[in-house]
Length: 206
Image (cartoon, rainbow, N blue to C red):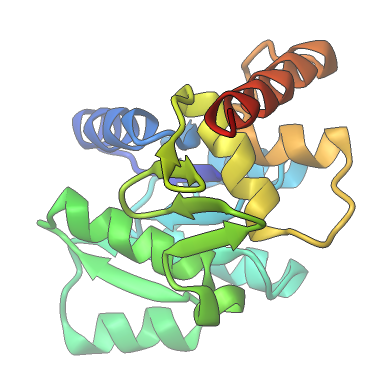
Protein backbone atom coordinates (compact mmCIF):
# COMPACT_ATOMS: atom_id res chain seq x y z
CA UNK A 1 0.00 0.00 0.00
CA UNK A 2 1.34 3.42 -0.98
CA UNK A 3 0.86 6.52 1.18
CA UNK A 4 1.55 10.20 0.63
CA UNK A 5 2.46 11.82 3.96
CA UNK A 6 2.01 15.61 3.92
CA UNK A 7 3.41 17.05 7.15
CA UNK A 8 5.57 20.18 7.53
CA UNK A 9 6.95 19.30 10.99
CA UNK A 10 10.04 17.35 9.97
CA UNK A 11 10.50 15.52 13.28
CA UNK A 12 6.88 14.32 13.34
CA UNK A 13 7.04 13.45 9.64
CA UNK A 14 10.13 11.32 10.25
CA UNK A 15 8.48 9.50 13.17
CA UNK A 16 5.32 8.72 11.18
CA UNK A 17 7.33 7.74 8.11
CA UNK A 18 9.53 5.38 10.13
CA UNK A 19 6.52 3.77 11.79
CA UNK A 20 4.65 3.25 8.51
CA UNK A 21 7.67 1.80 6.72
CA UNK A 22 8.27 -0.54 9.66
CA UNK A 23 4.75 -1.85 9.09
CA UNK A 24 5.44 -2.43 5.39
CA UNK A 25 3.90 0.63 3.75
CA UNK A 26 5.50 2.50 0.84
CA UNK A 27 5.70 6.20 1.77
CA UNK A 28 6.35 9.45 -0.09
CA UNK A 29 6.86 12.57 2.07
CA UNK A 30 5.89 16.15 1.27
CA UNK A 31 6.57 19.10 3.55
CA UNK A 32 4.30 21.71 1.99
CA UNK A 33 1.14 21.91 -0.09
CA UNK A 34 2.89 22.64 -3.37
CA UNK A 35 5.18 19.63 -3.00
CA UNK A 36 2.17 17.48 -2.09
CA UNK A 37 0.35 18.43 -5.29
CA UNK A 38 3.48 17.77 -7.33
CA UNK A 39 3.66 14.24 -5.89
CA UNK A 40 -0.06 13.74 -6.44
CA UNK A 41 0.17 14.82 -10.09
CA UNK A 42 2.62 12.05 -11.01
CA UNK A 43 1.79 9.21 -8.59
CA UNK A 44 -1.14 7.09 -7.45
CA UNK A 45 -1.78 6.78 -3.71
CA UNK A 46 -4.01 4.48 -1.69
CA UNK A 47 -4.16 6.94 1.23
CA UNK A 48 -3.04 10.56 1.66
CA UNK A 49 -2.29 11.74 5.21
CA UNK A 50 -2.78 15.49 5.12
CA UNK A 51 -1.89 18.19 7.63
CA UNK A 52 -3.88 21.43 7.35
CA UNK A 53 -1.36 24.07 8.50
CA UNK A 54 1.00 23.82 5.55
CA UNK A 55 3.32 26.39 3.97
CA UNK A 56 3.01 27.41 0.29
CA UNK A 57 -0.49 25.97 -0.21
CA UNK A 58 -2.75 25.22 2.77
CA UNK A 59 -4.09 21.77 3.48
CA UNK A 60 -7.72 22.64 2.73
CA UNK A 61 -6.74 24.00 -0.68
CA UNK A 62 -4.80 20.80 -1.35
CA UNK A 63 -7.90 18.83 -0.36
CA UNK A 64 -10.10 20.93 -2.64
CA UNK A 65 -7.76 20.48 -5.57
CA UNK A 66 -7.60 16.71 -5.19
CA UNK A 67 -11.36 16.37 -4.77
CA UNK A 68 -11.95 18.34 -7.97
CA UNK A 69 -9.74 15.80 -9.76
CA UNK A 70 -11.06 12.59 -8.20
CA UNK A 71 -13.40 11.32 -5.53
CA UNK A 72 -11.70 7.98 -4.90
CA UNK A 73 -8.33 8.73 -3.32
CA UNK A 74 -8.66 8.22 0.44
CA UNK A 75 -7.66 11.30 2.44
CA UNK A 76 -7.04 11.34 6.19
CA UNK A 77 -6.58 14.78 7.74
CA UNK A 78 -4.03 14.79 10.57
CA UNK A 79 -4.14 18.18 12.26
CA UNK A 80 -3.68 20.08 15.52
CA UNK A 81 -6.90 21.93 14.71
CA UNK A 82 -9.30 20.04 16.96
CA UNK A 83 -12.37 22.27 17.14
CA UNK A 84 -15.63 20.73 15.98
CA UNK A 85 -15.89 23.40 13.26
CA UNK A 86 -12.47 22.44 11.87
CA UNK A 87 -13.34 18.74 11.76
CA UNK A 88 -16.72 19.39 10.16
CA UNK A 89 -15.13 21.65 7.54
CA UNK A 90 -12.48 19.08 6.65
CA UNK A 91 -14.98 16.24 6.36
CA UNK A 92 -17.51 18.35 4.44
CA UNK A 93 -14.83 19.33 1.96
CA UNK A 94 -14.16 15.70 1.12
CA UNK A 95 -11.79 14.18 3.67
CA UNK A 96 -12.59 10.56 4.50
CA UNK A 97 -11.36 10.81 8.07
CA UNK A 98 -10.00 13.34 10.56
CA UNK A 99 -7.50 12.60 13.34
CA UNK A 100 -6.32 15.30 15.74
CA UNK A 101 -2.84 15.78 17.20
CA UNK A 102 -1.50 14.53 19.53
CA UNK A 103 -2.40 11.01 18.47
CA UNK A 104 -1.37 7.42 19.03
CA UNK A 105 0.36 5.74 16.09
CA UNK A 106 -1.67 2.56 16.57
CA UNK A 107 -4.86 4.55 16.04
CA UNK A 108 -3.41 6.22 12.95
CA UNK A 109 -2.57 2.85 11.42
CA UNK A 110 -6.00 1.45 12.34
CA UNK A 111 -7.65 4.36 10.53
CA UNK A 112 -5.43 3.77 7.49
CA UNK A 113 -6.50 0.11 7.46
CA UNK A 114 -10.15 1.14 7.71
CA UNK A 115 -9.84 3.54 4.79
CA UNK A 116 -8.02 0.98 2.67
CA UNK A 117 -10.78 -1.59 3.02
CA UNK A 118 -13.83 0.64 2.63
CA UNK A 119 -14.77 -1.17 -0.58
CA UNK A 120 -14.15 -4.50 1.16
CA UNK A 121 -16.01 -3.96 4.45
CA UNK A 122 -17.40 -7.49 4.39
CA UNK A 123 -13.86 -8.88 4.59
CA UNK A 124 -12.71 -6.99 7.68
CA UNK A 125 -8.98 -7.29 8.34
CA UNK A 126 -8.92 -10.90 7.18
CA UNK A 127 -8.29 -11.45 3.48
CA UNK A 128 -8.63 -15.02 2.21
CA UNK A 129 -8.09 -16.77 -1.10
CA UNK A 130 -8.03 -20.56 -1.65
CA UNK A 131 -6.46 -21.45 1.70
CA UNK A 132 -4.31 -18.31 1.83
CA UNK A 133 -5.03 -16.02 4.79
CA UNK A 134 -3.69 -12.48 5.27
CA UNK A 135 -4.39 -10.42 8.38
CA UNK A 136 -4.01 -6.70 7.67
CA UNK A 137 -3.85 -5.84 11.37
CA UNK A 138 -1.16 -8.30 12.46
CA UNK A 139 0.60 -8.50 9.05
CA UNK A 140 0.58 -12.29 9.41
CA UNK A 141 0.15 -14.43 6.30
CA UNK A 142 -0.57 -18.15 6.42
CA UNK A 143 -1.41 -20.91 3.98
CA UNK A 144 -3.56 -23.72 5.34
CA UNK A 145 -2.68 -22.57 8.88
CA UNK A 146 1.09 -22.60 8.22
CA UNK A 147 2.63 -19.16 8.73
CA UNK A 148 4.59 -17.80 5.78
CA UNK A 149 7.89 -15.98 6.18
CA UNK A 150 7.64 -12.96 3.89
CA UNK A 151 9.68 -9.77 3.66
CA UNK A 152 7.87 -6.46 4.13
CA UNK A 153 7.94 -5.85 0.39
CA UNK A 154 6.59 -9.33 -0.36
CA UNK A 155 3.81 -8.78 2.18
CA UNK A 156 2.92 -5.44 0.59
CA UNK A 157 2.72 -7.01 -2.87
CA UNK A 158 0.58 -9.91 -1.67
CA UNK A 159 -1.72 -7.62 0.32
CA UNK A 160 -2.42 -5.47 -2.73
CA UNK A 161 -3.08 -8.51 -4.92
CA UNK A 162 -5.47 -10.00 -2.36
CA UNK A 163 -7.31 -6.68 -1.90
CA UNK A 164 -7.92 -6.75 -5.66
CA UNK A 165 -8.41 -10.46 -6.24
CA UNK A 166 -10.36 -11.27 -9.36
CA UNK A 167 -8.82 -8.30 -11.17
CA UNK A 168 -6.01 -8.29 -13.73
CA UNK A 169 -3.21 -6.25 -12.14
CA UNK A 170 -0.53 -4.90 -14.48
CA UNK A 171 3.12 -4.73 -13.46
CA UNK A 172 2.98 -0.92 -13.63
CA UNK A 173 -0.07 -0.75 -11.37
CA UNK A 174 1.49 -3.10 -8.84
CA UNK A 175 4.70 -1.06 -8.77
CA UNK A 176 2.72 2.19 -8.40
CA UNK A 177 0.93 0.91 -5.30
CA UNK A 178 3.71 -0.95 -3.50
CA UNK A 179 6.93 0.97 -4.14
CA UNK A 180 8.23 4.38 -3.03
CA UNK A 181 8.50 6.79 -5.96
CA UNK A 182 12.26 7.13 -5.54
CA UNK A 183 12.92 3.40 -5.06
CA UNK A 184 14.82 1.43 -7.70
CA UNK A 185 12.49 -1.53 -8.05
CA UNK A 186 12.15 -2.82 -11.58
CA UNK A 187 9.81 -5.38 -13.21
CA UNK A 188 12.45 -8.11 -12.95
CA UNK A 189 12.84 -7.42 -9.23
CA UNK A 190 9.06 -7.53 -8.85
CA UNK A 191 9.04 -10.93 -10.59
CA UNK A 192 11.64 -12.11 -8.09
CA UNK A 193 9.46 -11.04 -5.14
CA UNK A 194 6.43 -12.78 -6.61
CA UNK A 195 8.50 -15.91 -7.20
CA UNK A 196 9.59 -15.80 -3.54
CA UNK A 197 5.96 -15.53 -2.43
CA UNK A 198 5.02 -18.56 -4.56
CA UNK A 199 8.00 -20.47 -3.17
CA UNK A 200 6.88 -19.79 0.42
CA UNK A 201 3.36 -20.98 -0.37
CA UNK A 202 4.71 -24.16 -1.99
CA UNK A 203 6.93 -24.84 1.03
CA UNK A 204 4.01 -24.54 3.42
CA UNK A 205 1.92 -26.99 1.37
CA UNK A 206 4.46 -29.80 1.67
